[in-house]
Length: 371
Image 1: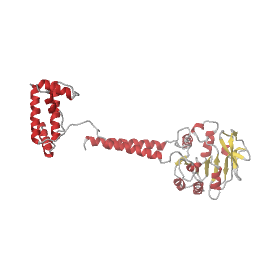
Image 2: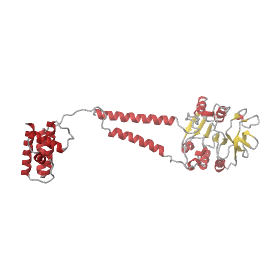
Image 3: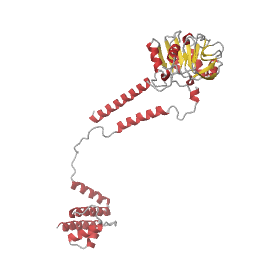
Image 4: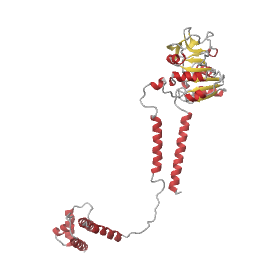
């Protein structure tokens, strides 16, 4: 393998490793809201890390089919952090697949989703202010804690236990398990999971208590369901634009390395044969003669003569023809008109004898100038 090919192979391998590293970093951290691998302000990496450090196995799931295929268990909690990314049919299938799990947690779902998926009738009230949960709270894990502001309260459905509200409304409510679903916990606040609000009030304690009641947590985040409410919203760019840009950029870089012509230092190579200048001139003349292009041959002879006498007389390259004829006539002793006829191009076709005579006269003119 030549040095050039070796360098190209190493460059392509380095590019592949860089792309793989970038993609690996993108897979470990992202900008998906309420995602357990998102370290940004809108992510939930903080609560997921604390849960993992306290013995809870947090499994991030981004595919609905994968979530449905996960085996249910009494010690498993299923969390859907963004219910807008799941359609009612899909949510009902998830609940049915995990009906033997401990509970299904939904973060700030829309009342229409609860109605369509589980036939739960409720309404979303206004934004709740900071509410203290006293002993009247029916959920043991939420007692003595305070729910922060910017949370949505729900009309408590029949048979539910609620917190952070009054008898008719609550930010949090839980329904017991039914035939086709596990126990359902609805939390109307994202602040208990968000990195930027975890340290505010009792948000951290609420998030850890709500999600850490079992030894395993299936965290569904970042999935895409074409029938979900978020998929139905109009967007400026389709979802395939960014992956297409990444793929196009990678292809352009590979094309640049493949088609690169200077992947190493320049090297010299000996020519297979040596072609002398007189041989090149003779071969060119034979081509002109075979083509019977006498006018072109005459133009080449006149141009070569003009260049040689100009350099001999020390005249600049851009000198006009009139000045050149004057200087040649002055140094050769000929009449300017005669010199002009010899040096001026003539597009008319001439025979070979006239062409031979022209070549002799041009040679004689050069000799006279050099005397």
